[in-house]
Structures are given as C-alpha cells and as structure tokens.
Length: 274
View (tube, rainbow, N blue to C red):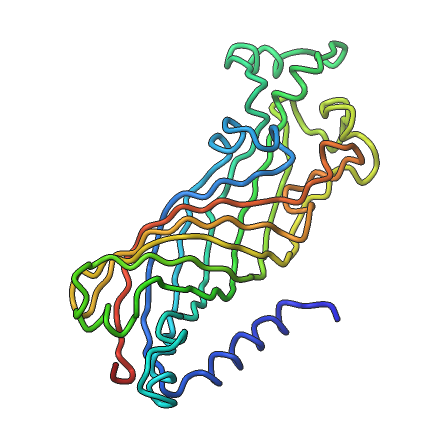
C-alpha cells in the first residue's frame, strides 16, 4: 500500500490518541543547522556536507509513558525510559552547488556577458549550476533515555543531564529547482553538464518522500517546568528525487540524506501528574 500524506497524518493522530491516557505531555521548540547530502558535490565529503546547509526549525510534542508503567506495577520498567515524540520540522531554503568547482565572481560575470556563439568549458558549466530545496517534515520518533524519567523530572537524581538516543520515521514534502548562472537551461541545454542534458535527467517541482532517522542527544534540567535539549539526527530518504537530479549515472544513484544539529527548550505541560 502506498503511504500518502493523508494516510500518514491520520496514523499519527490515531496513535497519539490511543496513548493519551496515563501520560504526561511536553512541548518543545528547537533550532539549528541542517546539511543535505545530495548529488551536488561528493558523497561522504566534508566540504560538500558543510557547504550545502541551511537553518532548521522544529516544533515538537513529547509524550511520556511512565504513567502507564505506574498504572500496571510499582516497579521500574522500560516505559520509565521512553518518550514518544511527534514533530514538525521545517528546513529553510537550501542553496546547493558543486563546492569543489570554484568560479570567481569575475568569471561568472564574464560568462553572463558572452554572446550566443561562444561555448563554456565543462568546469564553467558545472560550477555555474545551482539547486534549491525547501523541506517540511512531519513524523514520529521513539526516544530512549538512559536515566529513569520519573526520577529525572522529580529532581531525585543528582545529575541534571539525561542522555538519550532515538529512532523514527517521517514524511517529507519538498520543493526543488535547478538554475544556472550562465542563463536559462530550459531553453539551452548546453548550459548544463552533459550528463544532465538527457530527457528526464532533471525533475523540478514538488513531491513527497518517506524518511527514516536515528540520533543522539541529551536533556539538561533547568527547573521543574523547563529543560534544555541538544540533539544530532541523521536521516535517510527513500527517494533520490529530492534534489531534482536524476541523471542515469553511477554517481547519481544514492538516495538523499540529511544531518540535523539542533538545540532548544522543552516545557512540561503536566496534563497528568507524574
């Protein structure tokens, strides 16, 4: 069965409702930097990762399950270490380039003023190619905390830190575009690298993709109601279409991935008592 955005959102709503009893709730706001690993640049290359990045924003809802554990028995269980997190994440417009191909502003200006009879080198064509992506993600994560959550929030632990690791999934809506500093490639395919001139090698527009993620982080308890959180998340998508580059070559076969480093604040709503 194909997972459409509507089905995905309904599953999230139903699951949240089923666990709403005997739980406590929190709301969080986070911001940071996200880097996309795409067909722009080289896979596994630090420069390609750090150059193609943008700002990320997250609004999250946290649901603690320790209340369920206390309802079933008085002893500590795995539920005292688990939080279910649902989040909306927006990654601001990411400008993409092939960072290992550097063109000076003077070269770019000279290229723009050439007449139609002149040709460009392969380096000039590749270095002038640009992409842009915006992403909106909605998904679930399961966070496992190393320390008992009830004791952590009640302040009975000596340490204010509580590290965690997580894994989950999300559905992403994206919008992409491909341009060139040399001119409009839609009317002149010679402005693109040769591998992107074939029919279907570039697919611009909007779309959706399922993603799976994992990460690590830690909370720091500021007060009874407020925590600071820092987290690092790595995500892989089930699509290679997010960046719009679809050339049938070996170096363009990997699915897009995302790294996201964020910090933020979490506020305890206390819908039910701890």
